[in-house]
Length: 391
Image 1 (cartoon, helix red, strand yellow):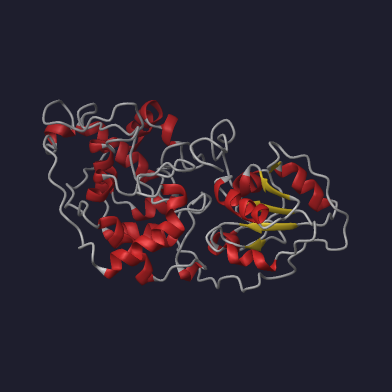
Image 2 (cartoon, rainbow, N blue to C red; image 1 turned 30 degrees about the horizontal axis):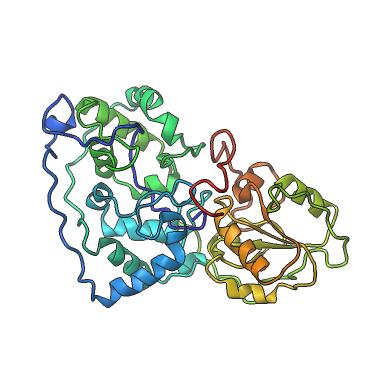
């Protein structure tokens, strides 16, 4: 979520067409089953189902920030649609639930399971899945994938897919198909379905009639070649309240002198320099606690964007209060807006976010702090903080 639920909707290439695989042509559209007519979505749970109602509340609190109020996605940091028909047909409930629980480490999508220090129990995760399914498509039995040539698939991926989907070390604007957690959860049949049918209504076009069945098999084999042995994260206890450790960093230090961009954003390098100079400040991690536990700026406190009551412990005495997230501006922008609403005088968003901070080698701590971030999280820098949303 860029503190949000980034349930990664798989696709294997990115293009401008939104056409679906048809019943004619040389590819999967004809050779591996036609989707010429779109089946009527099977209604999900009745709206009166209390699980759906509770799931709707959780969705509004934790997910809508990035995935949009109606689940159609792209409210922040390219968070994908969670209600896309082709996604819901190809993703079973276990895939969705585990994606919510585990998240995608080193991306804005946090792990929301209480076992990782997140806010949601298994039952609450299931309620979110029930909300996503309500009145929408049910998972289908997917055609089995076929063995392919990974080397041939690598060439095709570089030509067709990499410009949007990146690679295991580089996250671009579309779903990072090489993310180890994603590959641990996604089956070959799921990968194949995404390539064949695309995601209508998004830049991910259907390739069932553009590639041959052999080419699609090769792409799936190449993606699978990226998979590594997966070890689930260890159980974590969430931060205590008030947050662990002193709230004010260097309480006897001098005040920093920050030059803000647009009266709102302070550069990561300036904050790192101020910390090195032992300047006095408060730094707030506005992501879910699971992300704070994994990697954080030393001395930062955990006040998730969806729990602003935690700001009551932050002194309002003129001390600089900075917030960061992974979006890199959206969740932290909510915290800064709330601070300013409460009359805090010196507040700012740490401009590039924690992923950039970590990548630059600035100080971090936490259970996953030793693992460096490779590649550019967003090509060519980071998006306009005001593009498509208010923060």
